[in-house]
Length: 100
Image (cartoon, rainbow, N blue to C red; front, side, top):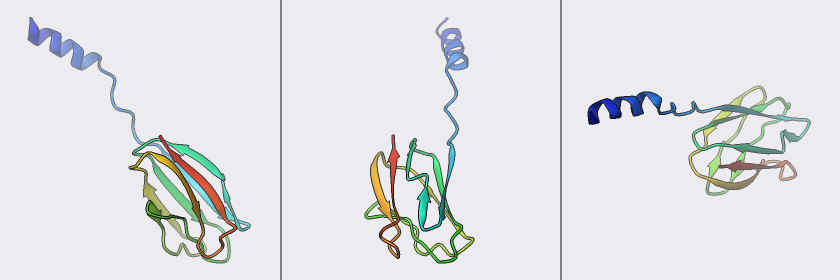
């Protein structure tokens, strides 16, 4: 009887949600969207559509290094929190990433 109940519970349990993918663009010396909320395990990709290189840098959390024109960089969100970040080459390019 216990085995039957365990099997029913295993089948009825919801499957874990697949990680989502999010894309941000760097264009016109701006990061869009400027604010993004993701879940732990989600993948976040920055795409540089400007003619100059950029970075996506949240001190102590992530640092893309140089993202060349036409290139992209992907980071997997593993730590929950609010993370303001900048392009270290162009400090006026600021954005906010929140990981739940």
